[in-house]
Length: 369
Image (cartoon, one colour):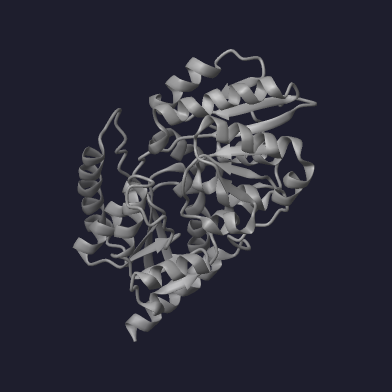
């Protein structure tokens, strides 16, 4: 029996890792353990509760206002100590957070095989998004297995000279998680507006701190004044760089609802009920198209071009005029709206986790022969 450790730091990682943890737990030839770094404490705990995941190890590294160097140092020390204690045969981490990069490096130092879930996403600009693009490039160079969600991601890895026999197109486990969750209706904690079209908004990325989040808020104000049947629901990320702007511009407006970040279940319910989604989230770019919801991405580039190519997601940046123009187009042109609301997602069929367990099984079989 091989011991696989799944390392999880943030809520998006927990959501995407949860189906994989479940799949390994159901496999008789694997022992699975979960290490939580708790890079995002409260949001991580929400996702764990939804999917009934318990952490076997918890580093609890989150401290107020910590810098990236401080976070990196704390993660490295905690991860190294835990790897020495747990002695896993393989470690898997997902995505592009500092947790993922440091996990890959800690495994390299301990000569433990590291597998990268959601591998090969690239903007080809190390500083956008920052520090996520560098995190995933660095983690990828230390991985023995690359679980690429799409052929585009696979091609990115091949261009970087990753060995072809280490790259597997599996689909994205986020679709596995979404399909588990979308057939339920969760309590949102407030009365969803009736007879209104709802724009669901999320923003949390570092590059949108400062003027960008102010422009986003100003655009939302203009949209609700232009469309009297429009209502905005904005689950506000706890980072004070986001909350300060949303409180200043949007607090108290009768058709703008600022709420605490949803648990994943309620967030999926909110996406299902929304008319339009504005977000800088990578996960939303993958999930919302599968629910038939158009997404305007509040970024200037994306490591997920497949949905843009498919026409169900559009990059619009954070310029106020661009946000207002693109949102108005979808809110007033039924043909344009229908073209983006086709329910098409290029990110998977809900069976990525099963494929990954099989790939890991074959890896151990070939390396023990």
